[in-house]
Amino acid sequence: QVQLVESGGGLVQPGGSLRLSCAASGSIFSRDVMGWYRQAPGKQRELVADITTGMSGIINYAESVKGRFTIPRDNAKKTVYLQMNSLKPEDTAVYFCNFRRGPGTVTWGQGTQVTVSS
Figure 1 (spheres, rainbow, N blue to C red):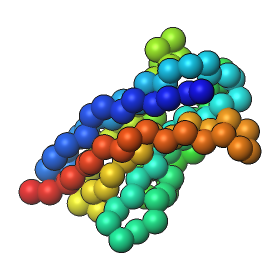
Figure 2: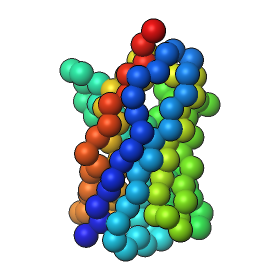
Figure 3: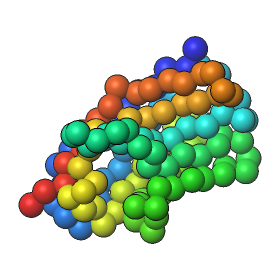
């Protein structure tokens, strides 16, 4: 069973940058998907970005983060990152790492708080 350990997050001023990391343990296959979701107070959890773990590395971004966030990966370390630039107050949320395999396997990280405020 895959487990996820997140790191990063914290308080940053508007316009600043942060990088989150998510390291997976266990076996990772080429059709798996890893990514990041976020949940702001009073709102539903939403996809931020995800990437397939195979050679193609297909990426999806939420419209709200396109051009500001990227999701680099290091397959050797079984780690995905969320590089967040030009942060806005509306990016404030708890960010969760996510692992998916097929239709029935989903694993969540513990969540890390990102606060964008002056």
